[in-house]
Length: 477
Image (tube, rainbow, N blue to C red):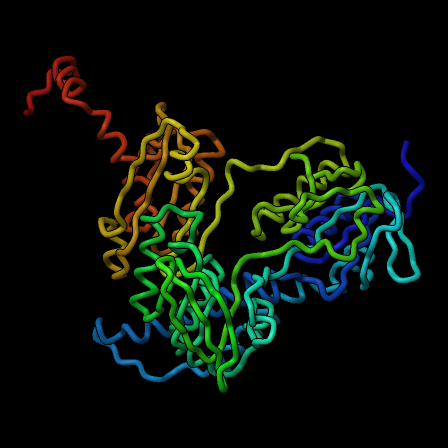
């Protein structure tokens, strides 16, 4: 028996996850209200995926122009910071109407702007108004996690929430963090005219990836001119004249001082649950503040669900959209759908890109999973040769039966190429099956077939070859 309510769904947060839930809900016949504190579109549209990829696109064009002499062309001109940001904003402006309040109201979603908080397990308050719904969906996203570094509070710095509105030159940009955001911004700004230095306490970049794959990315950024100081403890940050200085302590106990004109903090994300009064709704959290969720994305209150960054553990827009679909099935149709955790692809959009789905080689070793690894170099792919972009390789991890456990690709368009492996893993395919699929020549996607060919060749042992020659009366050596 349903409780007396105003709505079928109350969605808190108007980012990617919340918008998919709201649009999907009204499309399926539900009465939906969406509450947002600021503006619809969320981090992805304004300070994440969209502006970062727009800036990377400009940086790639500049880089290509600088390499033009190598193929007999001459291009001149330097990037203008104001025009760079104007282009970024123009791309946001093109996509923004898709996430506008008017569009969602036309769909039938009731939009309310304001800060929502629970007053009990069944009611939300926005100012002096209250809302009751059969189910609530927390989709409040995440924000930059700023580390407790001495002096940082007194020093001006950028995060992803402010860097894309900057229209002035950043002569010497220091970036804290060698994860995907830090590296994408490092390469973009280096190519657009900054001298970039990346600092991180970890001994290597992209710690979630295999070190041999990440090495291609680091080598490329270093070729662009990016400097790396890794394995460093940051002891203090302070303003120094018109710029800043960062005091570092090396693992051997020695120290050094790094000076720059500007600072970007890119040290991870923190989920947004502040101000929701979750305790009044009996929604429990972990010690680190993360929501306690089951595999159906339900909190400890059976009427409250979560999706997107706030649900974790993957801070990707495509994961937010997937989770939104899970929440819709579970809230509206009681389907007990579960979140996909085995086949989750992602990509770091540097040049070269580094994309992965499933287990890495190091993860397979850590989990003591019996496995084999097969690789193939991008330098052996003809399309990569014609495009003069041969850096990178593919690495596929399989079990003893040949079933794909994971794949990683570093190279041009790796984020596009990885989807063949995502589909193969979704269907529990064996690596050898990919060799029977016709791949267009010449395309980069041939690397997917070539690594499968490499795997099949290992099955043709001398003993197998001898038996085949006997059975089919073959006369070769």
